[in-house]
Length: 215
Image 1: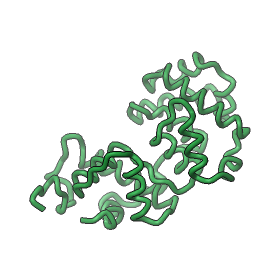
Image 2: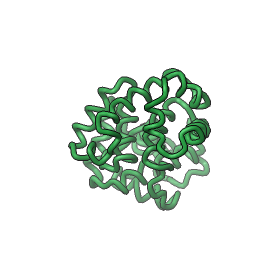
Image 3: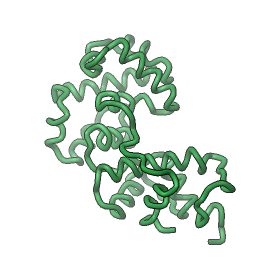
């Protein structure tokens, strides 16, 4: 298999995923931080706490709260003190734009990404998740699942995050819907078949190099 065929192969196996990352734009921005080093069920529980407390406008609501108050709401997401501070840092950045995402989108993807990466606690995966899923601009999100699948399925191992990102962005057209679904398909396949201990016997991808090391 080649990288050019990976999207269609995964889509045939798992079906259409759509946008994949759930929630409103505001919830996506918050959950992009909450999901760091934890599972999605814990993120959902923390988000529910936030929504109960804040009702509708969660970004403005959280911005008015102290780091300590936020940490209580997101305790279930783990590393709550660290994540509360990261959220506060991100909210300060958003406040510079009056929480208006359309103002942010007047800048280039590169400018937005550099600004996000200058926010303490926001790394490349988190920044790119916000850009792709919340701002809906075409940048490919790379996570541990992406690296695992490329290594096992295609024998591709790179050193830097941006090498992986650019590999996808030069192989596939820069399309928001495509990138959103593709990332979701990669996660679904990694969770269903290509786990830490892979279920190779049930995985339908016969050309996998991990399953067939001689190929």
